[in-house]
Image (tube, rainbow, N blue to C red):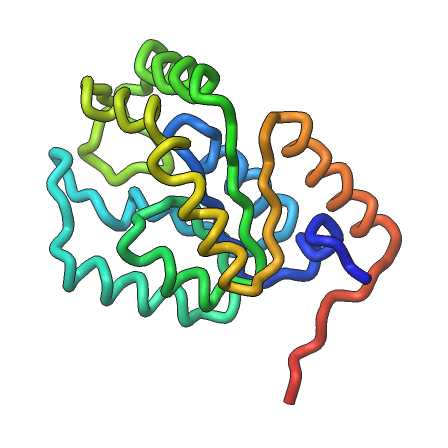
Amino acid sequence: MQTPEDYASLARRILIIGSGGAGKSTFARRLSQATALPLIHLDKIFWKPGWVESSKEAFDAKIDQIASQPEWIMDGNFNRTLEMRLRLADLVFYLDIPRWICLRNVLKRVLFARPEGRPDMAAGCPEKVDWAFLQWIWNFRKTHHERYLRLLEESGKPYLVLRNYRDIERIFEKQAEVLTSGADQPKDEA
């Protein structure tokens, strides 16, 4: 029987969720490089220059279009569309990283921000942190964790809860093992 770790090499639609600062975008970028699957950052789709939100209709239409593609790695929570994306995903990674690490990572992002912004963010959205965002990270596990676990269980999809960066590194070690063992990729079903 395949484990979710094994399945990471075979999945064609991978969803990555977790708190701000957990490392979703970095993990997604590395996984995309390892699998050659197209990478979708939801923040890049949702935000317009100057931190202007997309309309619900425009965002939903774009998500519908992207999620219907046969292959992707998609990072971001956007709770309103999470259930729809879960239905289409082959595999989910939930980065359940301790909040102090998430807060540290966000503060590091601000201190070392690039003038042109992050590659996983829309153009014209420079790095910023406000009190509401820090509170959201601090309370993330309390307000989202049980719901996420319930949704993941109900989805019936394979998923992995990664609680630290050792867990994340194991995914890439397993990926390398599978790729070097000559394992076949899944075939399209007729």
